[in-house]
Amino acid sequence: MIMSSLNLKDLTLIIFIAFCVWSSSYETCCAREGKQWRRSKTHVPATALVKKPKLGHGRNQHGAAGRSLLSSAIFNVLDYGAKGDGRVDDTKAFGEAWAAACKVEASTVVVPAGSVFLVAPISFSGATCQSNIVFQLDGKIIAPTSSKPWGSGLLQWLEFTKLKGITIKGKGIIDGQGSVWWDDSGKMPSTKPTALRFYGSTGVTVTGITIQNSPQTHLKFDSCTTVQVSDINVSSPGDSPNTDGIHLQNSQDVVIYSTNLACGDDCVSIQTGCSNIYIHNVNCGPGHGISLGGLGKDNTKACVSNVTVRDVKLHNTLTGVRIKTWQGGSGSVRGIMFSNIQVSEVKTPIMIDQFYCDKSKCKNETSAVAVSGIDYVNIRGTFTAKPVHFACSDSVPCTGVSLTTIELEAAQGSGFYEPFCWETYGELKTATVPPIDCLRSGKPSSKSVQSNPDSC
Image (cartoon, rainbow, N blue to C red; front, side, top):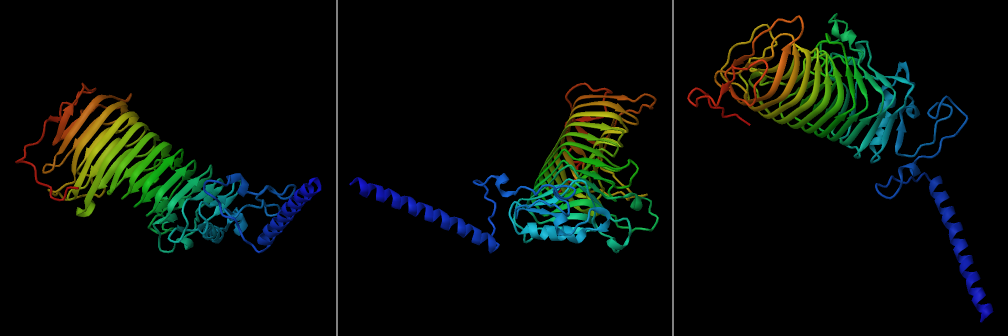
C-alpha cells in the first residue's frame, strides 16, 4: 500500500511538470506568431504592459539607437519616423502613430520630451477609433511659418474630432508661432487658424500643457460634451489680434479650473449653444476678460444658460466679466453667476452690452437676445475707466440683475466715471462702492417690452 501511494504521487508530479512545459511552449509559439495581449481594464496592472528598456545604448530610452520595447498600447512618434529636430516635417509620423493608436482602446500616443516637432495642419479623426486614447505631450510641437502648408487658409491647425474619451496631458508646449500671422503683411493666408480644436467629442480632458502664440484662438471646443480643462497655460502678447484663450461653442458640461490665460482677446469666450459651464480658480490677463458672446450676430438665435464663474483674478484686462450681444439677434442668456471676482486695473470690471458692434457702424434693430437672471457677488478691486456698464435693449430689457458686495475703486491716476445703466432691472442686495443707483428695481412694464417668441 505504501509503494502504491508513492507511485500515485510520483505520477501526479510528472503530469504537472509536463503541463507546465507544454504551457510555456504554447506562449512562446503565440509570441512568435505575433499575437498580442490587449490591456485589461480591471485585472492587468498597467506596469505589466510595458517591458523594461534596454540599457546602455542611445541618448535616452526613446533614442534611435536604444528605444525601449513598449507594449502595443504605447505609440511613440519617434518610432514612426519623427525626427524631432524642429526642421524636418514630422506630420506624417504623427499621423501614422495616431492611426496605429486608434486601433487599440486606451492606447497612448507619446510625444517625448527633449524634442521639437514641426507639424503641419493635421486632423486626428476618431470616426473609427477606439475610446479613451491619451495624447501624452511632453515635447514641443511648432507650426509652420511658411504659407505653403496652409493653402488658401484653414480654420484650425491641430484638430481632434469625433472621439469618445480623449485626453491631452503632459508638460509639453504647442507653439503656433503666430507672429507671422499677426502683422497682416500678406505673407500668410487671411484666414487664421485655431491652434488646438476639439469637435464633436465627449469625455475630453486637457491638462498640464502650454499653448502659446496661436495665430488666432488657442483652444476651442465645438459641439463637445463633458469637458475638463485644468492646469494649462495660454500665453500670447496682449496686442495679438483675436487670440482668445479658450473658446466654447455648442458645448455642454464644461469645467475649467487652475489655469492661467494671457492673450490678446477674451480669456474665455462662451458662445451660443453652451450650458452647464463652470469656471473657477482662473487667472486672466492680459486680455479682454471672461465673456459670454458676442451673441446673436447676423440676426441669429443664441442660447446660453447655467454658467458659473467664480474665484477668478483679472489683471490689466479690457473688461472683467462681460455679456455682449448683437442687435437683431434672438434667444436668451439666463442663469449666470459671477462670484468672488478680483480685478486689478481692469478698464470696465462689470459689463452687459446689448449693442455690441465690432465694425465701424452697426444699424439699430429692435429684436435682441434676452438677458435675465444675472448675479454678481463679491466683486472687488480697481478699474481704469468705469466700474459698471449696463447697456440693455429698449425692446428687450435686462431683468433679474442682482448685485451683492460690489467694491470697485478707481486705480491710481485714473479718471472716475459713474456707473452706467440703461434699461436694466434688478436688485441691489447690499450697498455698493460706488453706489449703483442707476439700476432699476423690479421688472419692466409688460406693455413696453416686446415679446420674444424665439426665446430658448
